[in-house]
Length: 517
Image 1 (cartoon, one colour):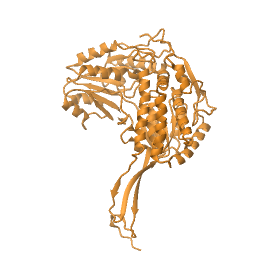
Image 2 (cartoon, one colour; image 1 turned 90 degrees about the vertical axis):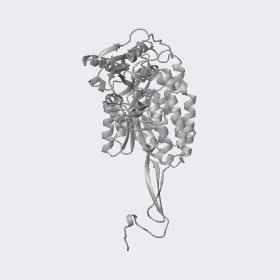
Image 3 (tube, one colour; image 1 turned 120 degrees about the vertical axis):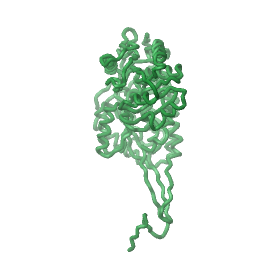
């Protein structure tokens, strides 16, 4: 479990991304200077200071929203395929800078380098999707009940879209929103996490350069930086018709209430408490792979992380022993070292939450199967490295009902029919991702039926973690109900308009109403 305190090319990556000497993270181009308070970004990998940015002031924000509003007026009139061409050029830069951006994601957030590269690949994939979408922003044509009339619907850009993203996916979630919003004709203002400000600056630098080189008006891609008070500037702003917010359920409820109070729209991607059901007909090898990656990937800091493993009593001991044995092979350390599977938690507050959760599950009657703990010594100086833990627990435990953003897996037993497992899986307030491991067709179909999983994502024979951009991503209940990325998620970034055209010399009214003058 030894971490290696080595640069791993991070210095070169910072230079390639233009964030090697950053002192500001505000403005449409991330180059202008702010008078806001300084935010220092320390890597959880080694505790070193990466760089500094300045938070957005009210005066800065007014400049940003004004610039974005003016830029939108021009951007919306550009044909959608031409907007798609700009996104394609942005995508070309992401492909060119995939390695350095992936390294920065890994170093500033703490996820493994391979996961950092995977996150940038998600950006590339959603841009590819958006480019194709730019020629498919279609409405419908309906038959009118009135002779000589044509009726159809079309979609128009909303305006300025506000995006609030979280630290665990510091670049991908922004791109899910902004790539679609851009081709839809919207301008975007992004508040990235104050815990990962340099990745936000790096992305904004790329976008600003591409837009400038292609004559796109300033303001189509904007960045603001700071804590929740900066986000409140957007949520309270009636000039922003849509707020897309990713984060905790607590945060989402605050955003939803504020935006609803001004009759704005929200797209919410909030907490998850995801389970894998393991039936007697499961492939044990695949179950172990899916469960372990789901539980420890990104050090348990994914909204789709596997939190609960619900195992049938007939295979309980077999699966439990296999999972425990697999945990012995996990390597923890510097995430830029590709020999390691798990990097650090984002900060020491997260470490405290992890420790408190392990204490709580024992107090409630749980049994620790794989002991957790904070790692110390050479390579672990940041104090953010922890051991992935496993505990036997009951679904009704308060701590199990709560989402702890850390690598803690709760395992529990079910008896009888798969419906009993579904009751456990659905018996939490969150409804994001779910999975069943089975080779029984009836169980799989029951899991996917209206009586099955109540989550927005339901997988068969794959884990809960990891989603392709082609499908809409999101969940129900306290996960917020939002949908991002693929399918028809683009519609949330546009306003629908129904049009009726009368091409006759008469004016018949609907429903056969007579109104003669």
